[in-house]
Image: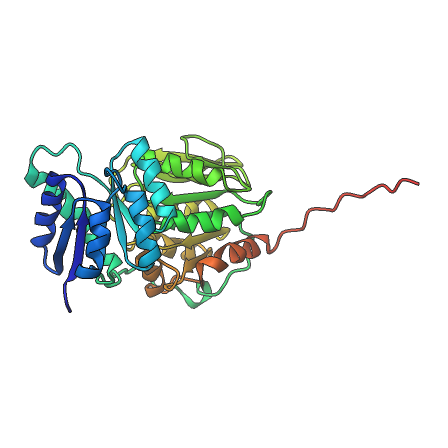
Length: 361
């Protein structure tokens, strides 16, 4: 199999050197070339024919957002990974880039004492993203407990909570699903999106501005209310616990699971324990297998799991791992998910009475 060809676009000589050396020394990846500006990158793409582009957001002249717009016009399917700073400004621009069609993002190395440690940080994160977006990472082996035949059928229990897990491609997937939940959605929604803290807050604000249901970044001790969406804050696991007849959110900084904090598996285990068979879980686009073991816990408790299909996923790692583990009740395209969620949550519920109208004579 030929190596994945990568074009590095950044106005910083230091960053171009760091990325070039990190990628050139990685098996399976070939540095196709570099560009110091958006205009040069656009000129080089047809010459170099890269499989993946890394694109700095903040550049003089044609900046990353403007360059991305041109790339999407000319090469709508070419994977683009945005490079940003871990700041509120950088996070806001990154979310804008993702909404415009960027495939993924990565924050620039910080707190690295040496060039060698910075390169190691890049290798650990960027290489996996490149290989996943180029379709070179096979589905991860996932070995949750086998489901008994009685627990592999689609359930009939009333759904009392919706739990969603996603990663690469998740912000756009969430932007398709959450705004389509109706006003008065009858259950709380808890979400894990793999992102740093400042990113998750801005993501919640962005979704809240577009949705019928209120969307919040989760806070310790908050009461779970029907019709509200809670997104786990970056660098914190989120769980759900019962206190009497109420359910509350808890946050912790226990060790990462699946190299992630927040982790989908942590959330899914907690909703399975707290809500038993009354859980609907959804696993959407994302790299890796986070969520597969948690999905097995939900299924063993009698709950249900929907997954996004491969065709509409940016990376079919997480949903694919659930399917591979035979823990998916239903596979849906992204455009179908919200409709299927509303249909399943509404099943078994008595419709709200229609108020009587008084006819004046």
